[in-house]
Image (cartoon, rainbow, N blue to C red; front, side, top):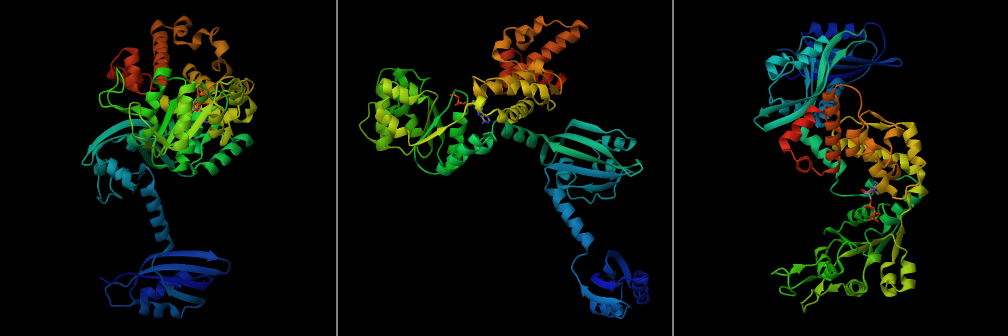
Length: 525
Ligand SMILES: Nc1ncnc2c1ncn2[C@@H]1O[C@H](COP(=O)(O)OP(=O)(O)OP(=O)(O)O)[C@@H](O)[C@H]1O
């Protein structure tokens, strides 16, 4: 069979151009496979695909056949017609999106199906276009019911395919023409594994970048710009700011941006008992002291080598460790307790404190030489009350995170609720805001969170419904079973919000993992 020939002809626009082309080709027994006409000003741009039929006609013959036509300005052979290009682009886009998509016409015949939908529906590379959906795919027929005007949203399905088991959420909508008549339906499938990975990335991103540090005010933008500049250096950074202003988050972002290959090791200097501080920081050799691990232990300085050691609450360090840390920073070497060798450590140091280090130095509670050593690149994180414009976006950010974690519908804050947040003085800074929003999301079962669910610390004592204990005392009206179900839902929501995983929440609630999963499903959480 001879290959088809594709041409682009440019004509002075006139009546009968298309008819003339058709009749010339018909006279020579050549068939038009497709023709596209684009009118531009006085010109007609015509794209043509011709099947030369069984006769041995070359593309040169076709060019000659059409060359004498009235008004023809140019004629050239082309590789693809515009519609083919559009189709190719459409299929490439469709195959590269992360949802499975299949559409059918009004008779239930497949009109589009992308690569992911083929995988999920286990139909490989079969030619499916034009085939009845139920005959071709055979898994379920809900999409066909959509042709009767029955859409569905997020139905959970699972199928076993030769590539393994697929669990997915599927939604479908009828396709209507301009008069409202149903002319087809489209189904969109979301792979559950991909959704879970995305939720994890949102709720607990592996790498914290400055994008995770939410804030649009000038002061925040300035500290981020400064931190970006110095992130890749080895200099010690000292982050100052009230409790809950995001010092650790910021330190993690600097570490990520520094591109150091080693780990980020956070140490809360105030949380480690004085007697253990040195062994934790510098490690020890075997048999260094009674109760020590048999094979000795690597300290946090060594663990952070090649990465970042984050010394949080450095202002709380007792004098002994202060001197040793100073030496380790200056010499870039440590000696394990009970050891004789100096060990090289290449850890970038970031310190943080909410204390006034200058006052501590004055009082003699913090070594002056250590103060000067760590105060090379100070960064001050502003308290939340000084940047009220950031409150709404931070609140939306935390609400989105908790909604993703709880898995229910996305909520939003009412304008009054936002005003209540903006007018609070935030002694606990961003951490307090995060807690307030999480509590509101748990307390409120509506899609819009109002002021009554925005409760600050001082309001909790007088608002019984804000605690799980209080929930039981907030007796409403309605059948007991309904009220109990409502209470159960709130308790589960609460447990899920405060636990790291469903398994952990189940342990806290004293029920099995499966029982909790069933209840989560029952309550649509
Ligand atoms: N700008 C921000 N954007 C997003 N989340 C933030 C921001 N600031 C703080 N957070 C969140 O608030 C919580 C408290 O932040 P973080 O622990 O970093 O504060 P901190 O200043 O180190 O507190 P502390 O001094 O008590 O140790 C964390 O959950 C953190 O992710």
